Image 1: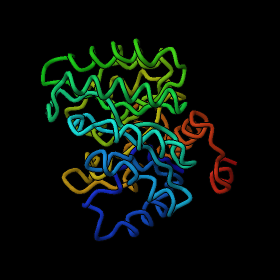
Image 2 (image 1 turned 135 degrees about the vertical axis):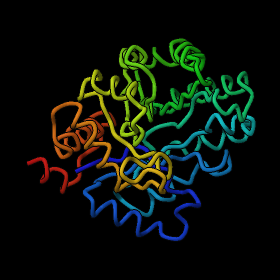
Image 3 (image 1 turned 90 degrees about the vertical axis):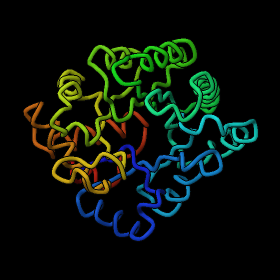
Length: 274
């Protein structure tokens, strides 16, 4: 029993076999998938909702990724404010800062991040954070936490640090603000010791797992298109770090997901937990 808490299933990489990908995930024991609603920019933030309307075990988010911050405008904010009321939308994101690629100017990224935190607070939705610093620097983390402290911590809504790549002290800062820490396939990469060190320290009850499909396929699938069925490999690696089986990690992170989002577990999840 697993939850893939972060997948970009709308991507063109899945256009030829999306139904089969989702079926494989179910066959691998994935009970729930969160379809991230970024698309290629503000005009596609309903992409996760469309999938969630098709499959009862898929939930959705919506938000403008920092890559597309330069495309944000008032019409986009008003549209998101409206569709955030959809019953299958459980979070706002992924949003945040990306100083590695700098596809949008950093000052603009900060403005769009801040505005979306304000909208998420009004909608009473937790946020899903993307934070990627420039190489050899913690600048994005510093700016991200600064903005979260100023504009988010007081809401008490928390959120998810998705595809966590930081250090344990950085994870601890997020935990103190009510966040869950989610680990992706890069946990399995040989050079990802910093991520594994953090994963060892994060309390298991505050941990989630994800694929970030179609990106970051875990070992032994590295270099291929990632898909939700592969979330088990991340659970396996996390289990190795914590002295648990993949199934034990799957069960705990699934419970964490349902508890954090105050969702009712599916009948088959309850049977599996029984």
